[in-house]
Length: 263
Length: 249
Ligand SMILES: Nc1ncnc2c1ncn2[C@@H]1O[C@H](COP(=O)(O)OP(=O)(O)OP(=O)(O)O)[C@@H](O)[C@H]1O
Ligand SMILES: [Mg+2]
Image (cartoon, rainbow over all chains, first blue to last red; front, side, top):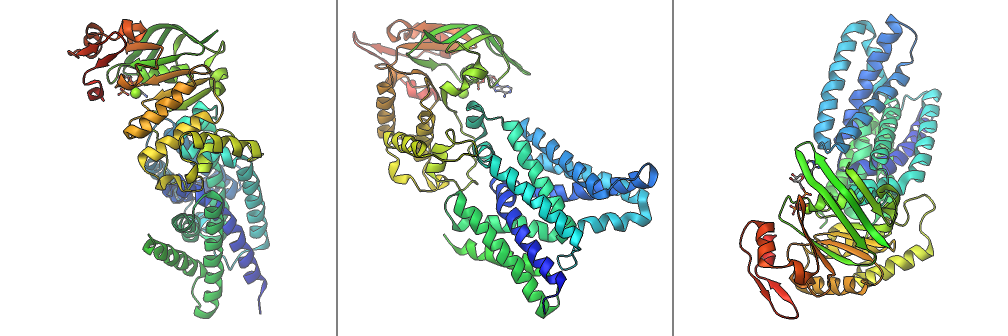
């Protein structure tokens, strides 16, 4: 009954729930959820640039270039924020820059533009074994780095001034968080598509924050909400014959709406 | 031993000089109150002492450079840029300076955190969400957090802006009890509640306009030089009272 594509989809939803609970939660706590979509557009620009380089100069893996470009966008936003720029404005500027680069190279690579789009628009029920492997490796790396630096990143996003006075390197750990978000977003984009990334990174943490007290329970809550939405989306899609990512997004948004009625 | 030594300290921002040519030696322990009008450079001076802004001149904190000396300082910033999107509990907040690495929370950390929360009367809120506390309660928790690392030096930038009279009085009592073990630097606009416990007063307006004991520094002439307006000072043999001191906020 379960074919291999569905099993891969289920595995992917578990991995996405891990990303949602960790860096998804932190981007919500940081108050910069727009960052996630900024990074997604950075990835598109990077993919287009990668293909352009391959066509004109030397072979370059578009996915790698997409990651590098996204990390660059993340660091630029981190630096602007450190220089006391409003994060929302910094993201907006980098968003405009990314889209300009994306449009520029998409128009130059013309017939290959769909390859670039393909890199950031995935389908959770069409994952290859390679996709799953990339996702698995990225998520495990991300989780390890997150656990090691969790407390410092938390201190920095909660109260940068006090963190700095206590000898914590604010620019370093804020940038690290942004790089983790960038890597997580790009890894997920390739597998599940931009809409699902945004829905499953931002919404579960936002809902969980309204229900639970304290960090550990909020993070666990985000994991469960993300998993329920993701698996629910796959399950419903088998009956309704609709894309699972849209259903997962709708379930997550409904859960959030219910939490709004609380308090 | 001097806890803080400043030689020809100058801090420039892009817009100009914030503090100029500050020379100061503060013995350890002592209680120093810093007064000055808005924009006088009080916060800048504190940040320079902690190595948080670029400076010219020389700074020694317990004999060391500011960057090395950071860990001996407990700092309560003026307007905390606290991010209340983060769902931390009171416990999490107080533990932050102690457990910023992966090894996690140890028993002695928890013991210390409970101890300082008791001092500010917030122990009953141990597991409560920080963002759901009132402004004054948050301020008390942040006050406790400055104590959790057992710092030699306490730096407090207008710590009573959100606290009621009772809390203010009890926090001043608490500060008083540290007099013989810590150097305390406190920026405050209304000096009246501190005249009894402060050892020295520093009058700052870009430069040091005065430094000394309350009886020598707090007088109408100095207040007028500092604030540019007449501020009556009532003096008795034991104490003094700056009329409308709290109106400079
Ligand atoms: N980050 C900054 N960049 C540029 N200029 C600054 C910065 N911080 C402070 N200044 C300037 O330096 C001067 C001193 O500011 P500071 O914050 O030290 O004053 P203050 O005495 O603490 O004032 P207040 O009583 O309002 O807290 C002011 O003129 C201010 O405009
Ligand atoms: Mg100030």
